[in-house]
Length: 560
Image (cartoon, rainbow, N blue to C red; front, side, top):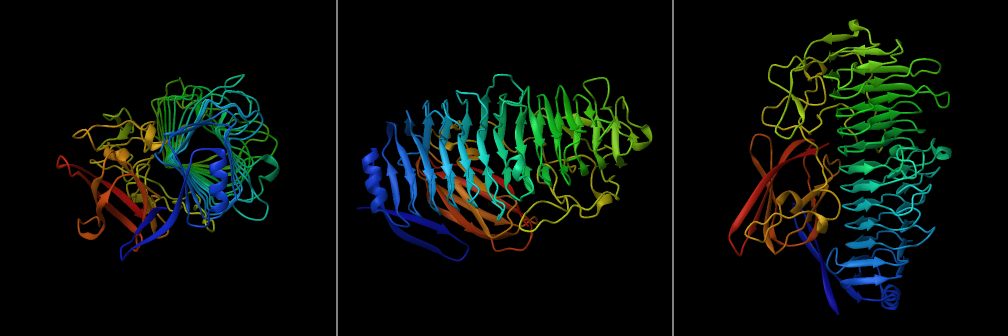
């Protein structure tokens, strides 16, 4: 019997525990292993390509994984249902199968960790559906791509319960290359939809963070928000020529820290109330960077748009007329260098404008609502606009906009204490910079995620260091960040066994603790960060013990 060891690294002790591992390579051997397994056991698929495999996972507390991540490929009518709690499902590829009107993955259980999975070129309904009875499901480092059929079924669907919030997280995933019968139309091929119109009054409290969306052309909505109190943060929406993020039915869509670049649009606020749009970057958008709908159903009300940077894009469309949005506040934004002739169109005249900087022809907006000056932005080496040392945006915010609400059990930056790249902002409003960033000469404005650091680790590009160590940015990933509770998870993905050192420092450069100092290769390890709220530094060092080559990097860690 093969032994498997789970390592939990904390600041105070390490604990190892053993479990039984079942090696499987067929439908029958999987079924037998599942029947014999108990909580804590592992079912491990041997590397290979398998057809027509249905995994109906009904035993709680087990792990189902590929022996080597990425080397187990399912096709034909293969699919999976997870009907139990506390399941880890990891390392598989579903490529080129055909399951007709079934879903590739269906999750009923709670506390499911679904990670490092690639689903591509499947004929199916949804790629992944999280049922309404599920809670605390995490989907991380997965790729969802190029579904073959195009009818009215979204790609990743989170259903919402009337009796309990879901608290799901979608992290570090990539969504790519979806088409539809009418690109950008209403074909229902949204990469992510949370809720449906009939359940929009219920709370989901789900978070989509650090995900990458490109060429999502199957529908006009990249993300369709149809539930209350969901957060969309630190994502990259790039090169989507027909679609945008859309806040539909369901109050309190919270959108911050995202990059919307080189596409059709940024955000369409379609329905409902209490939406928050802050700390976002909009550039190179050809149709509109922001749109407030004036529909008669679920009329827009109480919308805050603050600390965003809109640059080199088509006008912002406020849609005046019947049923125009009410109680809209635009505060401390930068509007500059429009690609079209005007910055705004169809302004209603009933918006509240506070502390905004504008450069360019205003269009229908009133000039008295702005500081009309060049914000002195410059493109950096990555091609993104950022404020310069003499910018009038620095320390120039104006108070008076609505206070961001606190929602129970939903963690977000409601005091705007961070900027788009997680630099600290002052707590005093008038000391904050206007726009999405807080000026810092040593920081570079650029997206947190791209095609190279999202999706399964085995599909990420590698950089040879003595032909052995993967690019450190890809080799170590950690989440969540910011962290509210005490646990932070590190994913290690290296070509060989390496010596990993992770140390925690305060901003004064004082070392607080060595979190990790051990040899690792691939794996997931959890650390407990028992410190007060604040900003810390994680210093990573990875050493190839064969060649004696090492590489290092430093990342900010926010403890809320």
